[in-house]
Image (tube, rainbow, N blue to C red; front, side, top):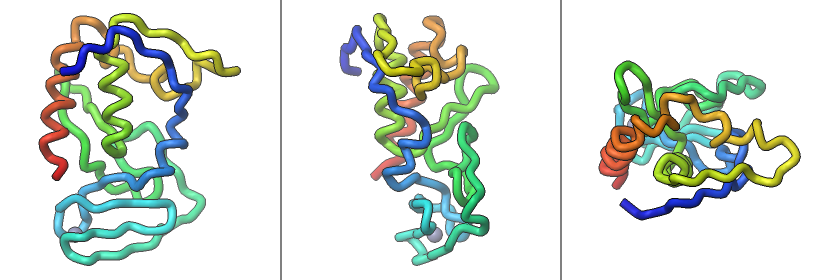
Length: 144
Ligand SMILES: [Zn+2]
């Protein structure tokens, strides 16, 4: 684990994460597929799908915001909670925040609305730090 005592909020908002493909479990073969606002594609079985409802967006749930497929990076954590991330950049951000012992709010205009500011309390509690970091490390092993 990297030692990152200080974390400065990079002001990422959850919607910004869709700039990178989101990893989901393929609805056909259950392997790792990727989702963009335009399409779902699976390298494992060559599935290609287009969004059922272009206006639909579901953020802040362990599903992708466009197709509502279960995220690839999700795991039970800390007794009944689900730790989830859209992709490895999202996982990195959570890890850096949770690992930090000094967390600084950013200087943006609405700091309370950033992704890390909205992480659930169970995830950011000091007593859960080790388990959350272990779960993140486990999720990394599912990425090839
Ligand atoms: Zn597939």
